[in-house]
Length: 58
Image (cartoon, rainbow, N blue to C red; front, top):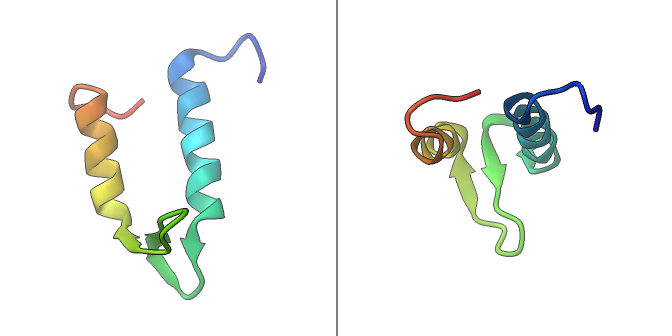
């Protein structure tokens, strides 16, 4: 990735890409968990990211 991008921006881009790759067709608020195929709500993923980031998304 571009050196001029901050870590938070890079992280957001990568998270977006993996989210798109795991998207469930016709169910925009769900993602399929790699390896198991289990469905995960996008809101739960975003909550987990916020928790890891100390309460804020970059």
